[in-house]
Image (cartoon, rainbow, N blue to C red; front, side, top):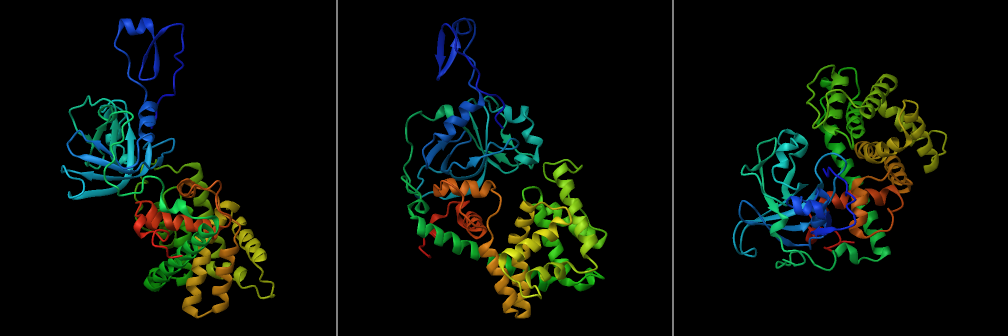
Length: 414
């Protein structure tokens, strides 16, 4: 996490150190002070793609993808794609390819002084980027794993250290599509994500043990747990699913939320109240029956706008916002309806679920859709939830690890 903002050092005289202006009196009296972390970050984002970085422990790290900026808390970079090489020949040598976080510091010792070594939030950090290696101890995560350290002071500025053409230097394959090709690809990817979710829910339905949830329909138990997990999107989905299971069974262990307090944050507390309201109000009527009546109206008015309005109204009645409702609809309710349609051979239900998914106007932006828009060089996010879900599908299947050769674009499967 970058700790300091750029200081205003303009004065009536002085010297410069690596682009920073230092007052003359300070330069005379002491050694020039080190740059702040923003300087480390700037150098990282200016590195050429596929550069080899020397590691303090020996070997090299090839930066296949620099990742995306982290948030206000936690590591500075998320989802960087790195290739660690221990031998002298990067072509012949076996290399470990990983996807993970990167943390910036001015000094290597800042890792421990900032208490990252006891914080599980940093357990996915794969590379420690510093300017000064001032600590003889290795950079160690809370889980005990040692993180390789690279000093950017050892990397010549203004020089490209690229030799292995694992990735095209000029542009990624996905950036070579025209608008029509891109829309077709995203729509297909969105439908693949929809089908994958439906089949996963179908597997969960088959695996359900009715005796485990006495007094509750198997459909309702499966749907409730999926909705509980979806309420944790962007927070802690594992904990939310465990809480849902505990509400159904009255027992069950809940792990300590990773990097969070045991006392729920206001947003988490609001969503937990929604989950309890859902179970209290819909349990007797039937959770699936409540939602199915919106998807299969008996009065013959089955247009997508009316179905969407009815579903939103149902969730609004238990205190859920429209934005979160839409996320639950596209990720859980509609795929679940498609799974039930497969079980019951109900073509009308399958058609209603698929049509509403295709016509859904759009979901809130998140870090994945924003990151993928930058990757595809889009000026704005695609219109419609299906194409937005397509961004998620491509990211999770291939783009997070930058397996361009396996991507539906690289293989020309559209």
